[in-house]
Length: 288
Image (cartoon, rainbow, N blue to C red; front, side):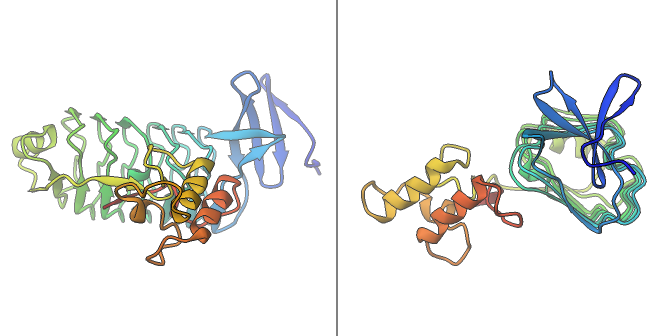
């Protein structure tokens, strides 16, 4: 038996087993990658850190072929999901992002996840929908791309039989010819005269033109585009009438969703920043 503090050396890699997780330190030993997951849990929330270093990356093939995982939440320090990371995770149904931190989801990361029906891509900062990333996700019905995306690569949504709604922002300028290959039920929701609008017409894909709506980040009380401890202070000062309430404050600061802003919302922001709120919408984007 290997203890939690043992090290394994594989082809010059130093691997660190901790329970069902195997880690690998990266970027000059300043960050940690999930090298492999060997657990059988149905619900997984990726750890925040190992040896006081933030876990920022899900490594290539880390969950490849896992047949028990149904719900995945990527913790707030994760920035990168590597290629084939969740390939053929046949039971995976739901993917959530704790905060808006993921900037890269590489090729085929979720390909073959035949049960995947929900993934909140709108709560990421990805600029590319990578090659084959959702290929053969046969249960995926709706996808909303964030307005950071500029490029949709080859077969990104190929063989997605039930994909009926894809919202593509006006920021997208390039879509591969076969991005939606054999996804015959897809309807593209797009903005007039956008690249997605032109693409849908050129390839005879059904589309719906939409009006652009402004979005906010829940917990971003001061409206600076990110959630921080400053937002907790901002809520407290606003409630104490020490500063003037900014436009949209009541939406951004109502962290518990009870319809009012109170000191509890400031507390929730503090808990969120300390990593003590695991199942929360704080950090996610919503429409006003």
